[in-house]
Image (cartoon, rainbow, N blue to C red; front, side, top):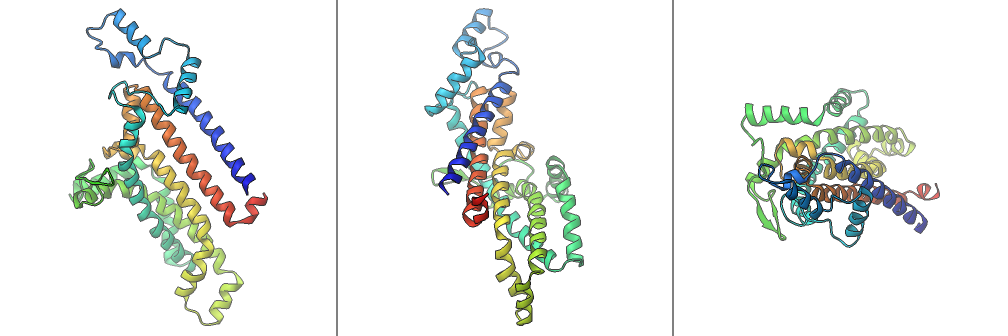
Length: 322
């Protein structure tokens, strides 16, 4: 087991290193942040040169990367060019908004998707099965920005039930601002959370449905039916535990994806989370914040995937052998 853990952690570190190189080269290939730091209307060539030297941008790219890695290993991601705050602290200040959005979305997606998949799989070929299959294909096919627009059009503009943007009222809890404990915050959470949840409901439903069909055709289920055990008890006491491992794996991977890739949803709904901070920082060429955000997102995404793989290896001995 220790070999599996060491191997998986080594892979995770290599991927992180590769992503840091790609992200660093990418953000340093576009534009010049000095023009966003100085007043371009009044700055002289000497001012621009001094700002370039002060930011360390006059050094070769490889040296800037070496300095970035050395600082990160010391726990320092630099200071934001725009906000004049430590970059990592700025990212962490946006984490509660993204975390509660992803958590609420997954709390909707996981039970709904699993229940729909169980119902569809246990009634293979019936109208519920056909409806779940067709709607799941549609839900997985539509892009998130189009879904966001449709939900805003229906829920905010046509019906007026929910606000179209913002986070709403927040309360201080455990030292952080959270919106979900307030009714206004829940109203603001509804549309962006649904946008993130709907594709995941479809994905989990299809996974649960295929697993249910496979388990329902096994001998022990037939034996349970022969003993007169009710279909509901078979479904929730025997089928669900047997399909739970791939579902839990999928939930872990999708939750990491929500934290990492909720960029479009946060931007459309003006949700003040990490995704919106990343987009704003890229537009302003705020390189320390971009690198801090990308590094944090990469660590979360790769870390969750590694944990899921290790969890899978713990539950399934065949994975350890392979």
